[in-house]
Image (cartoon, rainbow, N blue to C red; front, side, top):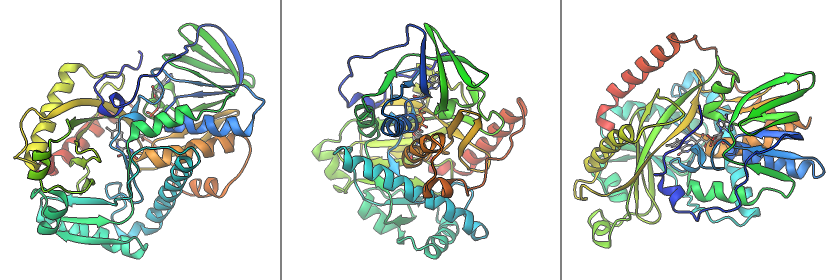
Length: 434
Ligand SMILES: Cc1cc2nc3c(=O)[nH]c(=O)nc-3n(C[C@H](O)[C@H](O)[C@H](O)COP(=O)(O)OP(=O)(O)OC[C@H]3O[C@@H](n4cnc5c(N)ncnc54)[C@H](O)[C@@H]3O)c2cc1C
């Protein structure tokens, strides 16, 4: 089975096509092999390249680098999240650990864009958690209390203020957090590809079929060649499970999103000419909606168990119709045919919202499972797993290793049945927010 993405993602289509794409076509030996060239793998490769200038480092991806979830997400670089099981104050300590990691994630991306002078539409606009249901006030009050105790600047907003800021009367209650950055995910990941050090060899369209350990080396089989490596880092996130990495601790979830064309001046005026904004849902299965810097509207309102390797155009179309409805609910004044593109992407989840950052075996490392918040954390984990695999230690590693480890998941078919019924339930309670 090979990873096959649709070609519909606006973020990726905004970028110039790349040239000089190399694939594996012979057998090779190397010191380091990284599987997966999203934020995690690219950051690991960048760090390893600097740490070991005289060693041979190979980075491989099944598709074009950065065109997995890293190039097709919603672009929220978050400092806080609401829908990850830490809404109760009982779990304040764990929530703090999580936000410490988000803070490191933001810093590492900031440092990267400063060092490489990256233009990724960086906007420290803050973000909203909003709902159309007045009953969600309780959830937001609890969240506000948690944010206050941890010192996150925020404010509770009512309908009129939300309307003024967002240009839609859909939302009745919300929290605005000062922290949180909006970016263009495609531009960020493309910059990471461009920043790869000279001693990193990038092979694309090269799918890892199988791997095994023989004494202290790892042998990896691809369609047109094998790679023998001294050390390996798995950075395939939603595909960790399919490669047998921590299989009982993570599972893939497929998300779909759609983006409108750029609003005309008249349409923009009709929605009140708001500044760029991003809204996250209060209920986990509600919609993420964003107005981009260049006046496009993005919506993501699905999360499901689906074949992670491919979504048919028929299935994507069904989800796109649902997303058109989501946009019309919020902006009835916009025309029906305004969606320009729809796409799917794969993320990885764990049962307890913890991430994977581990030495799996001698010379074998893995980082992933960001539960939908991987821009900052993926960039951070990539750099830090490279350090860990190089036997170095850092404050970041110590902080990451303090978080709870992912908890065990039941085997199939119980796992899929459990996730499907949970998602169905969450979708039901969030149906007004889709
Ligand atoms: C629609 C959507 C919206 C999202 N919104 C946000 C958001 O707003 N904010 C946020 O922080 N996060 C968001 N995320 C999550 C975020 O995109 C991911 O957490 C992040 O991209 C993970 O980066 P990664 O490098 O670990 O994995 P990926 O970007 O998934 O990279 C893994 C790579 O591994 C490759 N691969 C897989 N199997 C193999 C194999 N066998 N051989 C070789 N290569 C292989 C894949 O081709 C892929 O390119 C969203 C994701 C999606 C899909």
